[in-house]
Every structure is written in structure tokens, then in C-alpha cells.
Image (cartoon, rainbow, N blue to C red; front, side, top):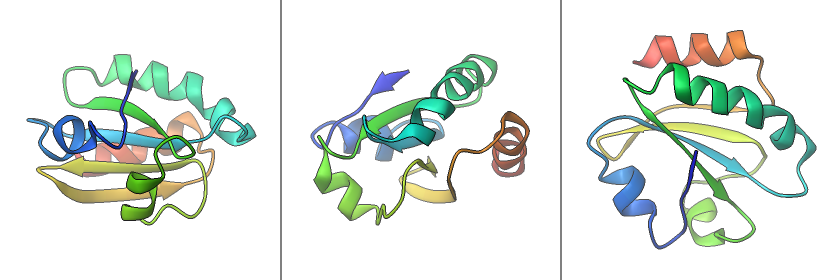
Length: 104
């Protein structure tokens, strides 16, 4: 999964040609670490339909603030620069698939 930053967020996410699932996470966040393998697996499974990226909220506070991130992990699906859906917490693989399938 690609890491995005405050400086690359607009290009990599908001101006992306297809949907982008953004994982807002932090190094110290246990649930974020638990979710990472599931997200990597889903990134491969959905590779033909969307991109999955990560952004470290501690290293990129501007984007976290602009997106209203208050808890981690937070997943936001962007399409055409707009928020299409958002989930918080360490979701199961099934919950994530249902979330993505309902929006794609």
C-alpha cells in the first residue's frame, strides 16, 4: 500500500482517476496494526476497482485535521474528490468487504 502525505494527498487521493480508500493510522495505534494485514489483502483483492493508501496522522496533521479525523483507525473512501463513505475502528474483513461493496 502506498503512503500518502499532506503534500501528496490532493494528487494521490482527491484528484485520483478512480476510488481511493484512505487508512488514517498512527504508529502507536494497536487497532491500526491489527487492521493493516486485512487492508493489504483487500488492496490486492480490489486492485482492479480501487486504490488503498495509508496516511500517518502524526506525520501529516494537516490532512487529518482537514478530514476531521478524531479516532484511529479511520477509513474513508474518496471518489472524484468527494467522501463516499467512512468507517472507524478495527473492522473485520467481512465488515470491510461489505462497506466497500456497498459503495463501489
